Length: 106
Length: 118
Image (tube, rainbow over all chains, first blue to last red; front, side):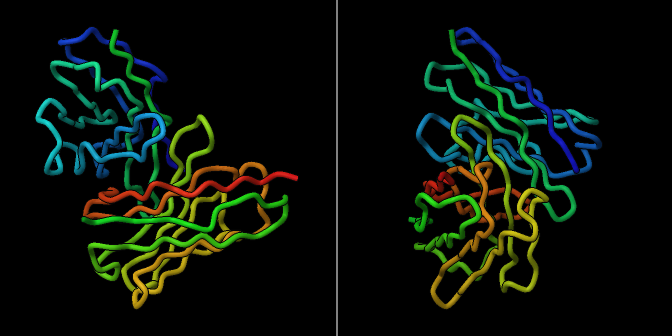
């Protein structure tokens, strides 16, 4: 079965840029989405179709995919961005999530 | 406001069955494919199953295939997940989610907790 790999944790200083990678075979050939989840809350969609943002999502969040790796980039990171981030891909008839990355804003 | 509200969770014994429901408001369910996504306590998200707009096509994760059935009743704007032969590994919060184009989830419910325990 298809798998997506994310680092368990990433740390960033306030105001800096955070990058969260997600890797999977031929990921560039699949549709990639990113979700943010804070404790006790449901996920919210940050990015779909590799780099598109739903309305209401700040421009600080951006996504890109090249080859086998998708990347979520958070510019000018704020304390409120501290959360879990999940990548997700559409593989044939199934949906697959990465294991998630805990972003810590130090 | 577009909303999804799940219900039907609870405590069930190993080997037991449970039926989850999800009611949509603020949009017509029959315009979209729908999925169930679960999250075990302290763990990540796991896609469980999906169903196309009219119920004619369903797909399942290997971990639940043959035990879970996803259903929908568009007339009632509702989605269901029939679960059987439950095991401890099925303990999780179950979220229904609307599928947008390009295979992503654009509306999420708050989830209903299923606990499998003797």
